[in-house]
Image 1: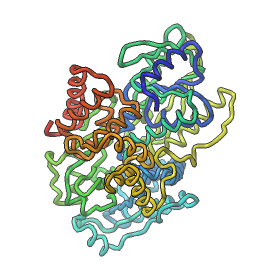
Image 2 (image 1 turned 90 degrees about the vertical axis):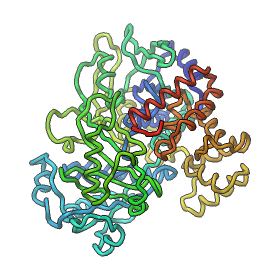
Image 3 (image 1 turned 180 degrees about the vertical axis):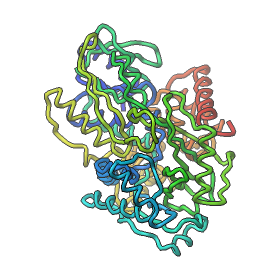
Length: 566
């Protein structure tokens, strides 16, 4: 992967010649489009004002899910699309997307049947109670939609004797439990980065630039600004695709489009150190209804940490999004509903995060009733803007590929070109040549260990983190040593490989996105300082810059993520 500096030099050379497509927004939808166009041989330029996947893309429930609850509002097409996309991601990215058993506790058998019918026919938009009969009917549709591409077991109703034995802490008010399968996304930011690497491999003229913003119009051209140096570039695109998510209205205004499209809601999650709950959950997730008829979830990240979410509150400030005290109280309360006696405490919070869902503007009403589907709005060239703008409204992790394909088809049509290949079955990043079974993966890990002279556990960890890219990481470790960083699970040479190969610009890129340090509960002053020292050597930072980077990361973790002990 080329460095950001080399891409900036190439961008200067592209200024005169122009570009067919400029993509604004380096979240998963913009990156998905970038990857799809690259497969068609279209050398798009993608710009992101921050790091790749640093906004809403970094703040999901870390699931690839079929959208069971969208059946409640009659969004059958979205659920069908979500189930199919989930099944393909399980095949295309098994290094990061893995099956997840999901348990849905219900507090009645027949409750909510009539109101569910009203919501289904859109005679009401207000969420309501759902008994196990309603849940089972939804799961029957769920299984049917995914039957042609099925890769996981169908749903079942769990006998209550089994449920009580497996989850002794489950609320006594629960009368039935349904089980089905969705998928867990272990490292969203890495999957996004893998897609960029695949795109630039397949179309070497394509460029994805972090910390470069679309500042607006200048003399009929799109003005780009390097957020690191302040340097500006004016380019002439054939068209612009605005995939800025919660920031889409802001980008549009800079292009002379003054029309409100977005009306986001904030979703907050907590990572907590609760080994007792993690033991009960094992490798599965509770997806449960709350007292206000919302859907929340809790699952284990490992043997000690759990993730609890998510809220759904109207919010229009994506730059300052943060999990509030009220949201923490709410999440603690709903956890107590499904697992009475949990008695969650603030000092158990390891990491909190929040993002703004890029939903369509809807005015008043229940946030849960706002469509999670995506749509593309076209704004033709006019006045001082000689190129059209296509703006994405909505979009979510699970359906990013289908969304990108639909946008790419619209772009290809405008360029007078035809699709040459679909991304539907394109293997992603570190899943290339990855064995599909545990025995095969163990053999590959053993091979990596032998060739790089690493212990078996380290090779297995690298394979879990990077998929088959672990072979390249292991080669660097073999050449440069196995010294750990501040006692963490990461090695100094591993961080060097990340900096050299993954377009790192700032310390936060490593700490918050290229690694899982915050989600592992290992962000300490010593570790942050150690990573900064490595980054300073690799990127040529002076002492003042390194100190500033450490302070910025520390402030972010404390103020935005509620990390303690920094």
